[in-house]
Image (tube, rainbow, N blue to C red):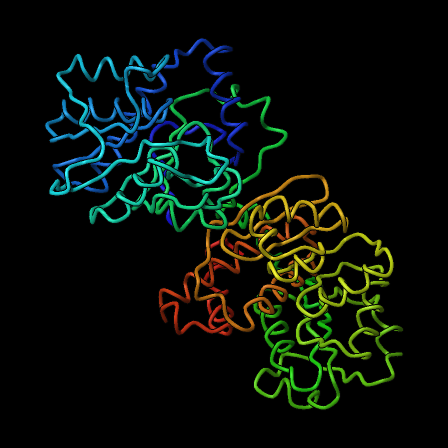
Length: 509
């Protein structure tokens, strides 16, 4: 997903908001700072026009499809400005524009005053356009789209020309990122005032396309009341802030000793990927505590890894675990051996990452007793999150941010909810979303690589929150580099490890 920054940039440009919070910023700008609402609408129209010209320079015949409210008003402003610039503009409205109120009514009146016309919906079947602009529904949608709006969305999606969404694709929930029955599939979206969190997770990236943001020159002070509940869109500065150049006077003990626990017989690959990712992410030493059946083989092609065979006797693990920073779960399995290893890790007073089978066993354990600890990171995919929350996967995907926040509070942990728009949430109610990554990363072992990255960052002294955010971003960035080289279909988890060095180097580490 591409993120373009144009227009005026204030301190709110990397914040993420709900639709209600964005309305609060808008109201603060108008009522508190005295910026006329129609002035903001005209600024929005100018931002859309500039983006349209930049992204679709050859488009000369535009369709602007307007709905009720201020999103429709934005459409009339764009139409007027485009016509003034020599574009052949067709405007159609799904509602009687004579019934518009406030700023939207003024935008419609100015369009008429500029000799503009509004065509009757539906559009003639033989009409042809180079670009369509979606100004139908805006951010307020919270129920399934029906009626004439559903018909209009279907019309836009089959039109055969690029669609530029104004503020948000119609039908996309601004808070959850879920398509409400249907949504416009835009070739790009220009969004204003504040970034809507739903645009960056779940269905959001598929429907929004490349996102361009403009804060409409609203001073950051207008967002002050919304700041406490705002999230954060992760950007490369997360890595440069979290990481620093290594002192010249360093040794391997300066960067921590990771112990990755897992790899039941037949599952040596998962723990090996985790360990190698930890080495490639800067851990000074990495030991794998794994099944005796393959302990002598798992590091043959990666001799930098140390290995400790763990059989039925887990005394060594219990006696020495305090010396390590821990990751447990990759290839752990669900046998008695698996549960005993997880129990030892959970009881240890040392930072811990829990993934994969470790999360599934944790869900079983939580059904019997309360698990209390601190300094840990949980890295579920939606299925594992559903087991931890005792709900359906669809409930997790229906509101990924809320699911991650609920898990974080319940387990007093930093949670990395993997998927499209990975969500990082903390027990204090804070959250962030990673806009990087690609479908090629949905492959066996990718999560094991993430676990290795996270535990390596913990071993180097990062807090659980900093490690979770930096690790999620680095993992996704490496995946994107791998996809550029191999394509998404051919991408394997090991390819992500191979591209980590470029990510760390770009961050100055």
